[in-house]
Each structure stands twice: as structure tokens, then as C-alpha cells.
Length: 367
Ligand SMILES: Cc1cc2nc3c(=O)[nH]c(=O)nc-3n(C[C@H](O)[C@H](O)[C@H](O)COP(=O)(O)OP(=O)(O)OC[C@H]3O[C@@H](n4cnc5c(N)ncnc54)[C@H](O)[C@@H]3O)c2cc1C
Image (cartoon, rainbow, N blue to C red; front, side, top):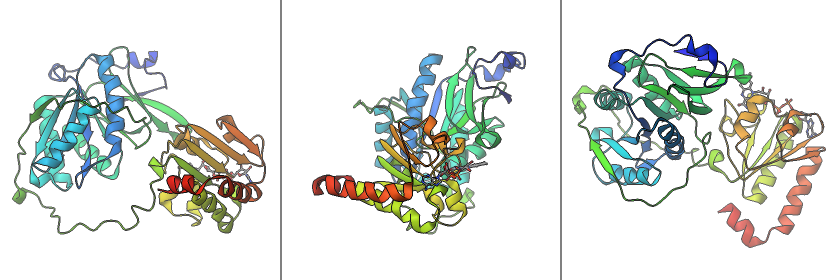
């Protein structure tokens, strides 16, 4: 692998390029791993289909959805959905052994698929499952993996230019896997926009047999215990998010954020120092090491707008920032800035919205 500055076609990189070994030249097409758990496709898979489509069109190759799951309706149903998000074809390993995620069985299935059908690019969601699987697959295939990408592009000679934050988020670097295939990358949920879903008939599905039996797998799933807290925060996919930062001054003042979020039917979030101080739980952190969000409205109160926070919110349609410092970096990217004390303004907004929003609107927002 090699690293270059931000521009995909950066001149310095070309001189480091070696000829792609002959046996990798047969690798063609873009694959997106469709992540499912308990019969539910993770939305990051569709976001990646959108990104994959652009890469495939640039390379003039096919975009394939790749799915591992149980035999039967669940896998067929999710694959049918993949065609609605732009897949030209799909590869599937459908076996009840793959009903629950286990690293061994999924790594075996995916590496076998790659070795058999040779994609040049393989994208996965940077979810807990995707990160675990991507690392194991890249290691097994002895290829490069660029994790947590924020941009994907194809450079002038057709190599994947995978851009991600580096040096604590203060710089972006573009990483290439020049001499190995496939070129692998993971992308966090909500970093890429959700493509439009277009009703389409399911296309060609290439089925592949899983080359192991249950007795070959050391890890056993004894029971599934859902995370009781997992439904509490749907921050990444919320339409409205209200967040607070250190400028609020105390955990008590953070309640003002929660109250405004409650009235708006919004999710609440925070900057990293509030998690570090134990004021707010870590699943509410927004930013480079927290969640990426793309709400229609983001209200940031007492947040400076450091680059590590900014990368998590700049996909928002509209950003309203409240900060006492008119030079705070958040005003560089907010759509509307209010220079003022958030501790005084938040209750005023809460009261105003609770008066102006009709009970119907409030119910709709909250539902
Ligand atoms: C590797 C790494 C990863 C990181 N990941 C993240 C991440 O995922 N998310 C994240 O958020 N940060 C992250 N950070 C931390 C980041 O660099 C900043 O330190 C952090 O975002 C600052 O949080 P803040 O804006 O709440 O606090 P501060 O920077 O202290 O800003 C507080 C702001 O509140 C304003 N203010 C003060 N009083 C008031 C008031 N009464 N009303 C209104 N405004 C007021 C101040 O003017 C100031 O702008 C990361 C850092 C590193 C090194």
C-alpha cells in the first residue's frame, strides 16, 4: 500500500506505482458487502451501493451486491432489495450456518467468493460486524484495507483512492492498494448519502456453496441476547439532532439539550469531552470517534466545531450553532449562527417550540 496527499491523481504517487502482478489483472468489478443481522439489512449497505455505483460507472464495470446469510426467504428478500439500490448482479452464499455472524464462517465464505470471482474493489460498512470481517478477510487474502474512509474515488489509472482522516483527524490522506487485489475499504454509517431506491426486478444471482460444515467452526452461538440499550439511540439516522458541548458548563445544563430534543422529537448528542467527563454516554458522541450524522436539522449548543466534531456533522442539511464566541470554528460551516449563551437560549427555544408546534406535529416528530 502507499499513501499520498489528498488529491486522488496526485503526481507523487505515480512514481511509486509498480506494475500490477499478472495474476491480479483478472480482478474486475466493484463489490459491496450487504450486511444483515437477524434478517435486517444494515442501511450502510445501501449507502455503499450508492458509492459503489459511482466507482463502477467510472471504471465501466459491474456493481455486485455480496450477501452471506441463511438459506431461504431472508437472503432472497435482502438481495431483491439490493437490486433496487442499483446492483447489476449479486453473489450469495446462503447457508443456515451463516444465519448468525461468526468471524470464521463469514471470513471463509467471503474469501472463497473473492478467490472464485475476483472483484477489484470490495467495500464493507465500518460497523462492528463489518470491521471484524473486513480485517479478517484482508488478512486472509493478503491485501490492503483502508478503514473508516470518508471519500472513495477512482484515479486516472483506475486505482481506488480511499481517503480517510489521519493525525487525529487534523489531516486527510488518500491511501492506495496498488499491487494487491481486491482493494478493500470500509466506510462508517451515514458518511455516504443514501441513494434513491428505485423499484426494480431482481437480477442475476450467482450462488456459491459454503465450503465448511458446522463441525469445522469453533465458535458456537448459544443464544442471542439483544442489547437492551440498542434501541435507545438512533442518532445516526435521526432527522433532527440537538447536541451540546463543553460550553454548557455542567451536566445539569446538558438537560437543556435533552429538553429541546424532546420537544422537537429529536435525538440528542454531544461532543467528545462530555463523554470523557461522564456527563453523557458514549453512544451519544458525535464526530470522528463517535457517530456520523446526516440530519435535516442539527442544533449545536456550546460546541466549538473542532475538525473531529465537524467531520461527523457536515453531512447535515442545516446546521444551527449557538456559541458565545463569534470566532468559534463552528460558525465557519454552520448555516445559521447565533452568538449567545446557550444556557439561556436553549430554554427559550424549548418553550417557543412547545407553544408553536401543534400537538399533531409534535406527535409526528416524536413517532
Ligand atoms: C483523535 C481525536 C478524536 C476526537 N474525536 C472527537 C469526536 O468524535 N467528537 C468530538 O466532538 N470531538 C472529538 N475530539 C475532540 C475535539 O478535538 C475537541 O476537543 C472537542 O470536539 C471539543 O469539544 P467542545 O466543542 O464541546 O469543547 P470546547 O472546544 O471547549 O468548546 C466549547 C465551546 O463552547 C463555547 N461556549 C462557552 N460557553 C458557552 C455558552 N454559555 N453558550 C454557548 N457557547 C459557549 C466556547 O466558545 C467554545 O467554542 C477528538 C480529538 C482527537 C484528538
